[in-house]
Amino acid sequence: MKKVAVLMDGAYVRYTLYRYVDGPANDSHLERYARNCVKDNEELFRIYYYDCLPFEEQRFHPISRTYIDFKQTDAYRKSLNLIQNLETKDYFAVRLGTLAFKDWRLTGHAFNRLCEAAVDGNPVEPLAPTDLQPDFTQKGVDMKIGLDIAWLSTKHLVDKIILTTNDSDFIPAMKFARREGIHVVLMQLGEVGNMLKAHADEVRGFDIEYVVTGERGGGNYRPQKY
Image (cartoon, rainbow, N blue to C red; front, side):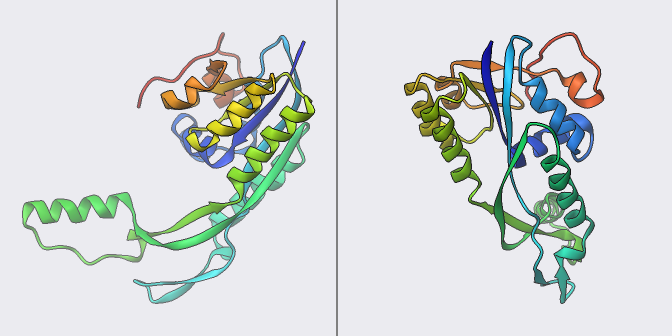
């Protein structure tokens, strides 16, 4: 049996699974997705999950004119709980970067509302505090994924690396793994660019029903365009 490692770009997986599970993906969704990446004739070495701890500092909100303590929010507690649950699951290795606050930005709804008012020549309604959301950026996650791909490849700990991402920045790491004789499998969770596909040995779908409900759907499926 071929030994495989599953590598998941956590932010991308959570964001994309949101479309299928009709809400934020929980640790069970993520575990079922990771295990569904592995075929019956393959042996799982380890699941590597890459994400960031939630932001826990305070920032001044320009509309409410108050300081928001992110550590006291529901989003903080849910994100921390997700990571803690994944850390205790069998075969999971959680790699954490840091989350940096860039600034505040308009929500999609607020942006569309302002555009429609401008086009129609209507008065622009004042912005409400809920019209802004924090804009975060990940630090260190991509580097950890790249290093693990290089480590798994040079040590020949696995025969295949199964990667879930839509970030073309990982192409050099994928090329390195293939040069080392490792097969690279790209999971098509959402729309994946042709550049990534070109540097994978296989593009693999997944069982949507199993990920969402835990019941086998009878085969692997590649999601349609959305």
